[in-house]
Structures are given as structure tokens and as C-alpha cells.
Image (cartoon, rainbow, N blue to C red; front, side, top):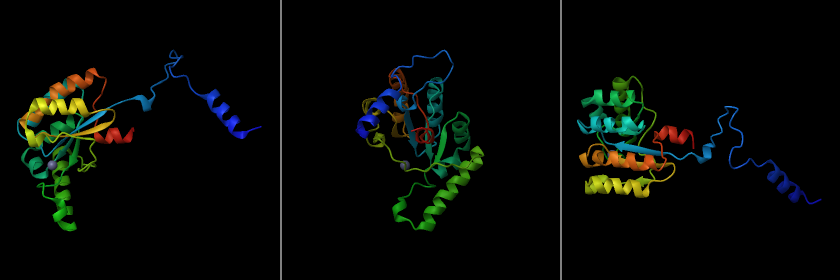
Length: 202
Ligand code: ZN
């Protein structure tokens, strides 16, 4: 008997049906590999008025996003960071003053991160576990053109299953793009999750 034939037959006979035939048991038949999500991330905030507006836009969609906050902005607006965390969003560390980290000493980088972690912890009672830069799939480059329609179009055209999207909540145009993004991608069946959630369930 050819062993490879046996293996192939074995695999074929145990393959699960593509569509669940039995749902009456109450078992969760969700195939996690089939679930698609998008992780929107917002760097450099919080920013007065824009971040609060963004939180209002996200709420009706139950969208969860990740904010990579800058420490000095967290210290200036702890109430916005608290609101982010309270709404179920992820608050990440994006340095204290947004310097070019490659030009700093290790000790200076550490200070940038530690100071920010402390400010986030003071605002939310929880130290951040996520650090930017993360690896993005879609960099909107929203800071370059400051055009809400173009930001929306870029995300809607480029974002697909399990992508991380980079935007900035310090620009009015980026925040203004969010309702259209949420509406269109929700209609295409995408839930919005945090970066940590996406990574944990990939
Ligand atoms: Zn940044």
C-alpha cells in the first residue's frame, strides 16, 4: 500500500464540511480563520476637540481603535485619554515629545517611553502595553494632504482583512474622514478592533 495515498484519503475523509450542517447544539461554529477585522490606529494625540469628536463617531459602530498617544499631550488632556480607555479603546505609547528616536541615546529613548507610560497610567490607571511604531498595512499619509475625502477614499480602497491602518487624530481632516470609513467598511462586513485584539486572534 502506498502510504501517501492512505494519508490523502485520511485527510479527505476527516475534512469538516464547508458550511456547518449542525447549529442546533448552540456550539459556536465561528471559523476564526474566516473572520475579517480592521484595526484603525490614531497617532500623536490626544488633541482637544478632535479626539472627543472621534470618540463620538466611533461609539455608534461599537468600533474599537488604538490610540498611540504622545505623552505631553496625555499630560495636557488626561480626560481625553481616560475617555478613550473607558470606551474600550486601546491606549498605546508613542513617546513623550515625538522626537526622532533613532537620534536619541538608549537612555533618552527609555525616558521618552517611561514618562509617557507614567502619564497614561495616571490618566487611565493602566500602563500601556502597546508601543508604536507598530507594523501598518495601510499608511494613509493623512498628515501630508489634509483632505478628508482623500483620507476616507485611501482607507476604503486599501484596507482589507486584518489590516492595521495608520491615521492621526491631531488633524481635523482625518477625524472628519472617519464616519465615511466606518459606514462603508461596516457595510462590507468589517468589525473594528484594537491592535492587541487583532494580534491576539490572528
Ligand atoms: Zn507619530
